[in-house]
Structure formats: C-alpha cells, structure tokens
Image (cartoon, rainbow over all chains, first blue to last red; front, side):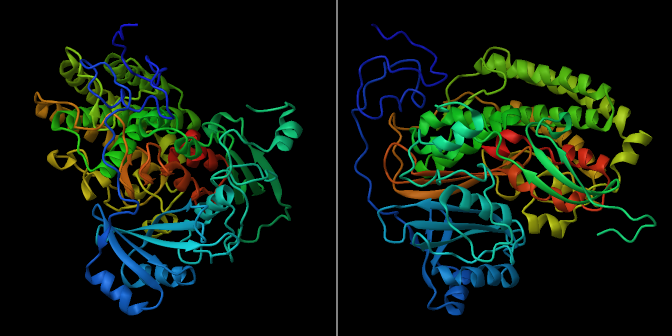
Length: 218
Length: 370
C-alpha cells in the first residue's frame, strides 16, 4: 500500500507493520504533508533514570528548611516548578505553616503516584498556590502501603473530596478524615484501580454481575 | 440548622437525580429538608466515571490526546490545550507563535460556546424558556467554525503536542471576525431578556452566596471565584499560549451570589470576543508545529500545568518515567472541585435554589467523574 496521506485526526491503525508496543506515537505529532510515517527508528538518546531537578534556592525554601530541619529532605526545582519532599508525619504542619505564614492559601490538588517497586510505594502530592505571591509549590511525600497519612481537611476544606478520590483510586486511608468513603466508584467496589497491578481491563466481576446483571462490562 | 419554627416538622430526605433535567447530567443529590428548607446535601457522583487517568497510563502521549476531549465535552478545546501545554512543558518545547494564536482563537471561541450552554440551560432551569434557543443559535455558529477547522464539532481534538495538525482554512480569519461582529449584539439581547428581569433577579440575587474566603477554602476557581471579588484569572496571573500579548479585562463582582456569577460570565463572553479579534490581527504566517520527535518520549520528570478553562483552573499533573507512555496523568478538574462547595451554597436555602445553584456552578459531569 502506497501510504496515501490520511488526515490523522484520531489514532487509526498503523499503515505498515511497525510492530512493537508503540506503533503509532508519531503521526499525530509530525508534519502531515510530506514524509510517510517511518516506523519508530530514531529514538532520542536514553534519558537519565532520575528527574534532572536542580536545588530550589529561595527565601521560602530556606525558611522551610529552618523551620522543619529534620522533616524536609529535599527542596528542588524542575522546569521552573518548585517542590519539596518531606516526611509523611510532617505534611500537615508544613501545609499549616505554608497556609498561615507564607500565604499558600489555596490547595489546588491532592493526588498520588504508585511506584510498586519502591519500598514506600505511594508518592502523595499536594499542589499549593498562593494568591498573594502568584506562586505554586508542590509538597511531596512517600508512604508505604498501609500507612495512614493524616488528613488535611482541618487545614483546607477542599481536601475532603480530593482525599476521598485518592482513597477511592489508591486505597490510601487518611487518618482523621471526616467522611472517608469512595467517591467515584460504587461503595461496594473491590480493588483500587489506579494501583499499577490493577489491569486496565480488570473490574469487580461480582459487582458487575450483581448490579448490572451482565457477565462482564468489557 | 434553621431557627425554630412554629410548627413541629420532621426531616425529610429527598432524592434528586441522577436522571433529573436540572442536574445537567447524571448528578445525584440527596437533600435533607425541613419543609422547603435545605438542611444538608450529599452528592453522589461517579455515574460517568470512565477511568480516564487509568487509560492515560496505557496509551502513548499522543494517543491519549483525544481522550481529554471527553471530560469537559462542552469545552473540549480547553481540555486539549491544557494537555498539550503540559506535555510540551515536559518536553521543554513551545508551540510556534502562529499555532499559539490559532489556539487562543479556538479556545476563546470554545469558552463562548461553553458559556452559551451554561446560560441557556441555567435560564431554562430558572424557568426562562427563550434564552436557550438564542444561545444555541449562536453556539451553532461557533461549532461551524470548529467543524470547518478540524471536522468535528464537539470532541474536536483540535491541537497536537507541539502545535497544530492543520493549517487554518481559507476564510478562517474572516469567519472568526464575522462571528465576533455578529455575537456582541447578541449578548446585549440576552441581557435585555434577563439582566433587568424581575423574576430573574428575584431568583438569583442573594442565592447561593459564596464569599472569597469560602471560595479559597474550597478551592473554587473560575467565574465563581471572580464573582466573589477575587480578580484572579490564570490567563493574566500565569499567562500561557501568548495571552500576555492580548488586552482584556477580568470581570469581577462583589457579592458572590448567583446573579453576580451570571454577570461575570456574560462579561467574559464579551472579553473572549475581544481577545479573538486581537488574536486574528496577530495571526502572521509561519510554522504551526514545533520540533517534536515522532515518538514522544519526555525525559524523566513531572510537571503541573494549568489553564483557565471556562469552569475554572484545569490542571494536568503528568509524571514521565522516560517511556513512550505517561507514568501518571492526574487531571485537576474544576467542575469536581467546584461541586464540592454545593453543600455550603445550598445550606439554608430553598429546594428551588438548589436548581439555580447547580446551574450557576456550571459543572459538566463528564469532567466531575472523568
């Protein structure tokens, strides 16, 4: 087949047998008019295995380090975005400090990332914003499976639903949360979908059978 | 809790939704009532949960791009812009100026389309039947431009990582300018119908008040925050896609009630048209795609990039492990976070206000549930 140009509006099957796990990353990003899509040949040089962050040097970072000398492990900047890595039991005091003393009064988001191979498998991420300084900072911490981090609802009310979603998707239970229930999935659902071992086609078969009356939702 | 009443009354639990015309989708609200008065609410969401974040981990960066359109489907272009900007940041590339200007035009046009859906349905909920026909008439013109540009009207997939896939079509600029000329008088028409309408004002004023402090506590952004008097818009605060070049106002109000949110959104539509005009003028010839490798493999790292979507701050937190698929994509959906404030806004109000407040929050359940 002579590779007629198709507008690659949506991912369509690769024209030639490119093979591999990733047959179709290119065409949507490339210039559409000329070169016929070549199978993934020129891969960029191998990236470093860790994030190439640089130290975050600012007054706030120094203040935080002075205030929490033992609890903050790293203050870094990556692509102009500042973040700090702290011990899990210090998160609430750091959020409180940032809110009351440094004007970070808007908790943008709480989320988690699952790294099953690490001993402390979940990375909890709090994204904060300061209206007064127009700045963002991310507070990160790593926790092991089964560790119950303290809830941030006492500091920011918005943490309520955000923590419920983290619980729903990752199974991280927040200690002291006023209403820790599943939020997007049904109450009786078994399993936590955003954990890495949860396959994309996996589902709670029993729930689907009992509640939807079908054998499988797939 | 309400002050003591003359008659003894028992609490009544009333279920509203998920199939209810005024919940704008599949939102279920459980209301605890004392007569007509709302004592408390509990939102049940997730009926439209498709696991978008899980899907992202199983697709390549480019393959996931069309999926984001399915979250806030009335403002699909905004979703796509946020996602593309996040991946571009991760790759450390920037779209060329022409691509940025086209992005701004389409995103602002989409903001108008999104606000028109809000205005039409909100007015319909309140009992004003006419505006919805007017709004959808004008929205149709906006959708025609999307269709001419990329073939799709709703889930457009208009942008690509690094820029644009398609050059604009002949007459694009003319059509956009014609839309602006046509649209501004129409906004006056909507205002004529509603702004000084006694019923409209009566149903909206002092209803669902959320002041600036409460907005920040609940993380509420977008027009709801601006109606409470906070002059904050990410297009100004942390400009992206060249918004710093355009001259526009951030409309704000003071009371933070439903009427103020109406005023803010109406004015935002005018400002969007103003930005579009300027962007058309700035539209110079040039490349539309940055140098992005065919196989997108960002270096190991993570970014949080957010934009001012029609509903508020839409953020993408993307973690790359150096492979062709994102390790984690977290979407910070404005609708989800804003909806959390519903309980505070309706407490002490009447049942009829619940309908007005759901309308004024301008949620899209596709984005709440993802």
